[in-house]
Image (cartoon, rainbow, N blue to C red; front, side, top):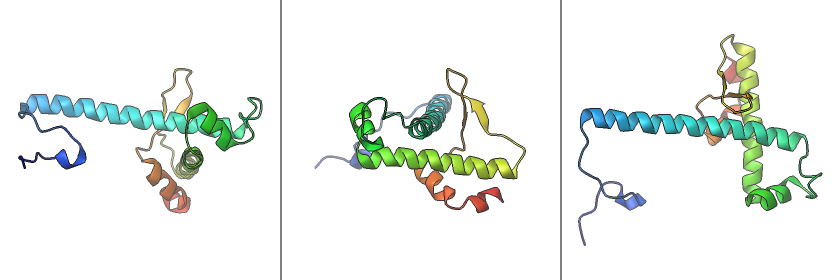
Length: 139
């Protein structure tokens, strides 16, 4: 068969001609900014999910449960609905441990309505893993 390009086995398009050093740094900065934006949006989503669940938002809308609300309103599975909730709870647990153990804050305004969100730069899986060890986080 033909020549295989780096990353092609993962469905990535074939490599292009290399950029200049300046171009590579510029692209890296754009990717870094986008990743920061994604982390920020995930944190905001977690806060909203936590609030929606805490207020049982599904009841006034006529849904019988959190999972049926998420399926009908967002088209996500039961597992995805509860992963969102797990992520929100994990973020709250990590924040509680960090807030108890330090004077410095990782709070930043990231929502249009001024709601403050925390960004620890952790993936959802890492947040859930760390939240089970909040005593270690506080240390």
